[in-house]
Image (cartoon, rainbow, N blue to C red; front, side):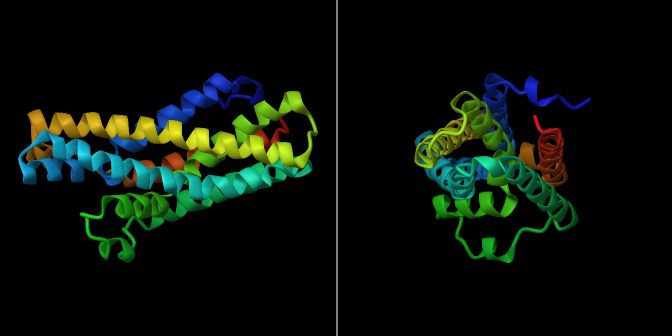
Length: 225
């Protein structure tokens, strides 16, 4: 049973931001194996930590690139429901696309893995990592705007831009924390061989997650909550 809009409290929405970050971090497609590879090649754990920050920065910039336009749109108070419905349909459509076509875009193959920040940015965009956060972000903006009512457009834009940055930073920190822990465990104890033998493909799960987030958001938006 899908929760009503009233059940999605700010605390629950922030928990969803953190949970999505942990989920992205665990996914090897977001880059933590590259951090392990850097440490193995240089034979020192400091290289692993050095690889994590460009991965985090690239992911953060990709999230911001997707969320910031919606931060400006939310200033249109009278159209908030339509914006949420449109965003939900966009997330569902991208999830269906990722489910049908699970191949990595060819453009990603042209980015050397050594360029970790650019690689992380491109991968996050290609996989729709930012889109997964849009419905959660719009829900947070709605709970924040309820008390303010129809405030001036300029004030709303300032508030929503700040919320967009905060959501992106919290998500990126959770993402790199989860990825960093996995990278450290693999480097110190498991080794890449163990991961290649035991890991499963998350592409379908990722696509289904996008569709689920979009469907829940759409149901709440249509209910007018």
